[in-house]
Figure 1 (cartoon, rainbow, N blue to C red):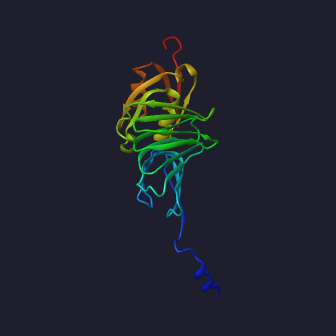
Figure 2 (figure 1 turned 90 degrees about the horizontal axis):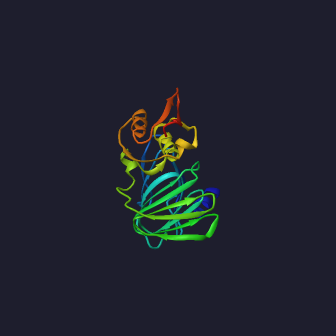
Figure 3 (figure 1 turned 90 degrees about the vertical axis):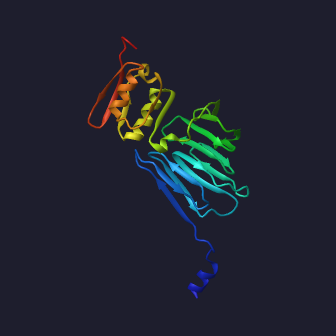
Length: 234
């Protein structure tokens, strides 16, 4: 009787909570139950209850992911991060929302998305293709830029691209890519800005090339790197 009761009341569709994760330096491609394609960047986690039921498709992202959402006007696709909620029907976009980053970034390549702050539900906006939005966790504020976003999520192909980014931000990206702790010792060097592309260069070579734009010192230890300014010539 117990078994018969279980079979009678058991949901017609079995649902499982799936956790996809990447290690430092790893990129992973995932196809969700609705056909949505997701690429996870290094040191990221995606949590999904599959298959999607009811009227929404919702996932939780920690880190960075590129999404090609399967179009379904009846079921919006929602990506939640620690501080942001991104709602779409079918589109291509990139979200970078690492917990240790003060600023989170959303780039839209195709379609339309609604972006909102989880702590301030009334604070939301619509984003169009070619727009990049920076969300500041300190004040729940948005900054929007219209720019050439280039090829979508080049990190999927192993490319590292920096556009007018400070060395603090660059160090975090390189830490995740090479699984090496990078300490920026002072603001003088940390606030230097760089624009550069890297493909298969090792970490030492990347710092040598960055030094050609702004000179600084970097010291390689056993499992970490320390970056310091040359105060007399920066």
